[in-house]
Length: 226
Image 1 (cartoon, rainbow, N blue to C red):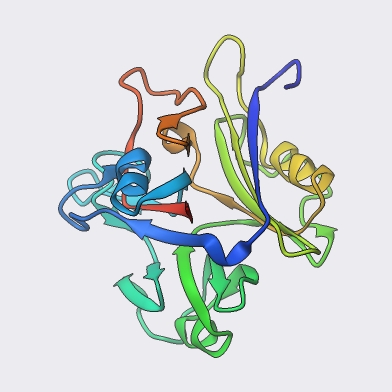
Image 2: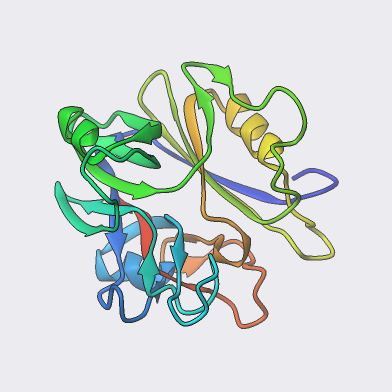
């Protein structure tokens, strides 16, 4: 808690339990983070990568049907709109060994690093213990935030900050970065925020999504195996 926002942090000691899930109706419609979590028997989950919808053509609106970039789950590419396997895109990925990758990678580079799980989003917030945002607030304004980091001991940090509410207006990218840094992250990245920002834990959503209708349909989620 701060005077400005309320956030939720989950620490996952075994990073190999952290996986990418996706809508069972990918490219037709999204599902909520809760639905993706329950489909995978997860104990916890946060929303994942970005999306657009062809009906409107604008980012992060609509039904969460059409992801942007790539979705990789259990070593298989489930979605890919990159122009080539060498095109770089900002990603959040986890390797077979449970190492979190953040920043720009091509599909070929992800395969070389033995990535097993991945979604496209960014920007990277912390790289090799160095904060990426040192001047200004990150340029994305104040909003609900979802982010992920990894500590030196391998533990994964999942972060969701509520926003657009009277008791929690939201956070800048720099503020999300600073929270992750305080929790010991040496690598970290932003994930899709706004009304997508959701944290699911033990059968329920524990944060307060900003959409008046509740959880937003999304194409992907990052979940924790039981």
